[in-house]
Length: 431
Image: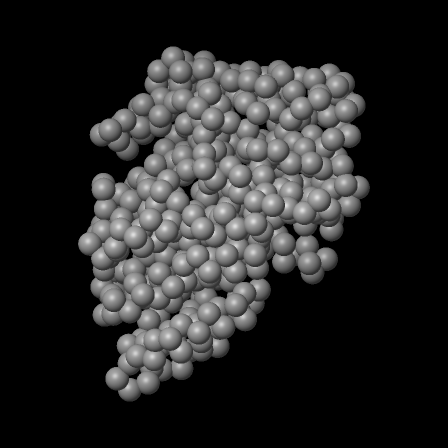
């Protein structure tokens, strides 16, 4: 039970992601190394998001090694409870008491980037240092052409599927596209009476549905920030999800419950597909070993674009730091190849550097690899196609709420698809 709780806690931290997305971050209490700086040295205050106690030893060792290599810099680590980061960093930035390095996701960090809260890195990062990171992931940390953060760890969802249910439904291959997913959904329902998958349409949940627009070739906003989905292509995406719901190929709970319900249904053998992080297979093995034994993994389902979504965590440096050079040196150290690879292994996540991702740990699972190792390899193999599909913008939650609530109205038959799309676009443009 305790292992399951830890896995849920870690999953909440990492799915973001993603997942992404979707994600409001954490803040907390000083780490073990919270003593003051030695006389004449610079102190770097470093905030992370609920990484204690699982990774306390990792960070204490990393900080000790950094300090030994940089005797003029001390690091004070503060780990902040998950639900508190948004309010704490907003308060700290406003009061001029922000840390020197803070762990956020690009979604939320971009909202503060629009207010010039972060140190611009473009003139401070050498081209060879920038080239260490995956180019598409670096772009997730830019707003209006300015880089506001260093990429850190990543999570990307894979398609976990129940081979027994597929066999019972006569499905030979996992779906690769949304078009194929609709076909599989009908096959599974007709043959077994169960659902193929669960995807949340709750505005406060992950942005999977919003990401599906981009994957199906529909931009969310245009170059000036206005709604770009009130088009025939955008209406087709609304129609796709509306049809699946009205044909009873989606559980009605998708309108009221989040991704955790998707996991519960999959573990209970009630759905055939779970879009989730590879790391969550460990939890399934604990909670539902028979389901885990029947589970295989495949790449993330996408649309005509073939795009795969990735959730990103970054490190940002507040504009008001008293030690910008020391802060940047530490942030680069945390996110270098060696340290990213070590943290990725410890946390079951993916690194955002090119060299670390090419390590055999990700690329060459052994012949007797566990399902988790295979899923991790599938996940890493997607990264060349992966990017943050929801562009960095202010008020992204407002856009998600406008789309989801109007899409729900169409699914429930309260609005036509045309009216739902028009109303969502008008609500966004009139904010």
